[in-house]
Image (cartoon, rainbow, N blue to C red; front, side, top):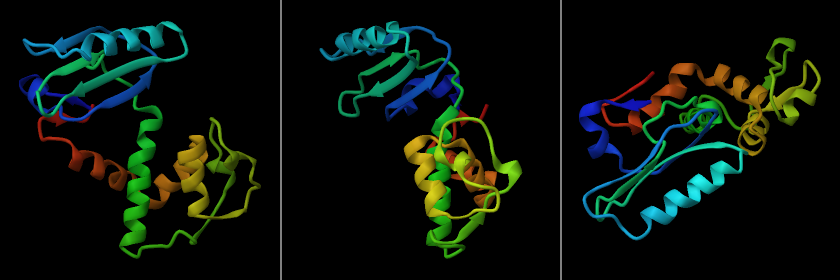
Length: 173
């Protein structure tokens, strides 16, 4: 997601931490900067310099309006961040009575995908309760579990809570 140029400064009212494989630049907005902005930027740069991850963060103090961005204007591959909206979509389906956490999903040969997680160690034909892939997706970042759940709820239901949470001037890229 990327905010339209006309609303980049005004609509960012939350903190987003994203991991990806490329970088950008740091900035603090506002004519007056809070004491916390420079140390935060320095800490983020130091963490990224260790080489274990690329970091993008945008934080805005809702009281003062002071914002700090470390690579916040970069485009990021969503990667495992999609797992939160998947969990929301699954739990909304439970809430609507479409299924229960105990409802069984049968693991098929074509369901196995790359990545970490114990779902790949389950045998073909295993009936897993929805609770199992939901837990593995969130605890182990299990991609096979995630794909099972996306198939259950449908991709449109995964995108819907994301779109609902963002202002109109953000666009899906």
